[in-house]
Structure formats: structure tokens, C-alpha cells
Length: 286
Ligand SMILES: Nc1ncnc2c1ncn2[C@@H]1O[C@H](COP(=O)(O)OP(=O)(O)OP(=O)(O)O)[C@@H](O)[C@H]1O
Image 1 (cartoon, rainbow, N blue to C red):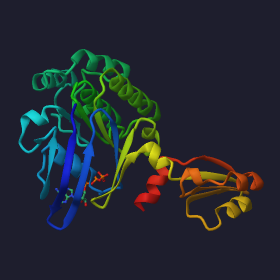
Image 2: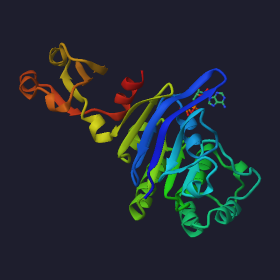
Image 3: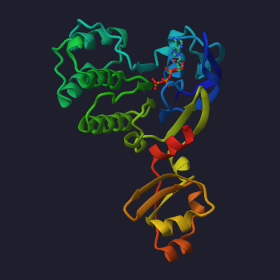
Image 4: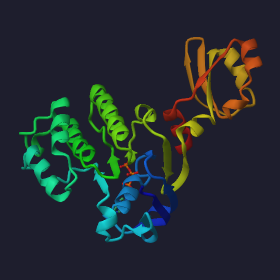
């Protein structure tokens, strides 16, 4: 069981405060989504968590042990970075062997099996992989690491819809086989929403939300129907994400799902449905 305790973390660069007093506790064996717009500070947080960079203020511990230059704490973490850090001229199969040397728990057979599934040719060199296959290659290594904490920074970068679907299914299968903490930082929110238990949302270096997807989605709901009737329903209410097709309109009402007015909805012949995480995210981070 690995509890990650991020305490009052700030990171300043010459003229940028990349993170500003962020405090988060990540409970063990949950799948977290780390969400934020470009430049919000996601990669900075992941780099701090894995001791690649050092905080200006604050401390990060795993089960009470600081991650600062602590191999014992860090060996439980596998970090799939957005950038390729593998030697360009090396063949994939050799990188599997080399990873095994560094991470004795790395499961080569599983990695080879996944490579077959994703049709990744392990005789290819890193430099010959397309953007999508480069992501697949790095994701396979992370999934095969057997680490207690797996971190994925933009894991589906360049992947087509089929491969994204396969990746998320594999991630869930991996988690179900051996529960662990997974942290997924991504821009493509709608697809990942079904995989996540909790979301951590960062805006301009500050933590603005950490809650379960279920709780976040219960703070809003979608109303759709004939435009003028939807307008009547949302009168005096806060809403976002208005979409109109012909005489049909849908909006996301920003109020607790418990407070929706079913009587009025029946009268106006408008319908309710769940809000989409992607749209809520846009409104929260705008
Ligand atoms: N080495 C650095 N030197 C100076 N500024 C930096 C450095 N690394 C990051 N920053 C700045 O810190 C802020 C946060 O960057 P970070 O890469 O953590 O964001 P991000 O949320 O991962 O963004 P993206 O989704 O675009 O990858 C940005 O303003 C970025 O320009």
C-alpha cells in the first residue's frame, strides 16, 4: 500500500511559478486523472513526484519516506514520460532486456505479448517508430513494469481511436489483475473518464479540484429539448456549453443533480442526461 503525500509543493522557474502551494494526498490503489490545460503544471508535478526536479518549497513522501534522492521510495514508481528518453538507435527488444536489468520486476513475456496485440514490431529501432507507436512502446514498458505506482504522461498521444480503446482496456485489465496507483495525465478527457476514479485538476499551478469523477459529475447535468423550452428551464440558473442544432438545444446546468426540477422538465418536455467530464473540465479551467 503506497500513500503519496504531496505537501505544500511550489516550483518556481526564473519567471514562472509552475506550481503554487499544492497539497494532495493520493490514496493507494486508485486510478487518478491529472487534468489541466497546457502549461498548467502537470508535467512539473510528475517530475517532482519522481525526483527528476526539486521543489522550491514543500515535500513529497511515499508512505512517509521522502522521494528526494531516495531510491527505496522511487523504485516503486514507473513513470512513462511524454518525451522519449530511450536511446534512439536501440531495438525495442533490447530495451525490454535492458529495462529488466534496471527493474527486476519488469515482465518481458507480458511486454512481448502486448507488443503482439498492438502489432508493435520489437525488431524496430526507437527512432523508426511513428508518434503513435512511440506512445504504445512506452506504455507497454510502463504496464509491464509491475510497479506499485504507474504514471502515464499523455499516454495516448498520436494513438488512433482503436489503439486508444485497446490501451484503456489493457490498463483496466492490468489494474484488475494487480491493483496499484495509476496516475494518468492527458488532454483527451472524455475517453479516459470511464477509467478514472478520481480527478485532480490543476489550473495555472494551483490545485482547483480533487474529487471522485462521480462527485464531480453530480455537480451538473445536461438539459436538452426544444430551444425555447430549454431557455425557460435555465432561466436564472448558471449554465455552460450551450449547443444548438436547428430548433434543438442542449446546455449543462451547473447545479447539484439532486436539485433538478423534474416537474418543470415534464411541463416543458425537456430531458435530463449526465454532464460530460470534458465539458465540465473546460468550464472549470476557463
Ligand atoms: N525547465 C523549465 N524552465 C522554465 N519554465 C518551465 C520549465 N518547465 C516548465 N516550465 C513552465 O512551467 C509551467 C508548467 O509547465 P508544465 O510542463 O508542468 O505544464 P503541463 O501542464 O505539463 O503542460 P502541457 O499539458 O502543455 O504539457 C509552464 O508555464 C512552463 O512553461
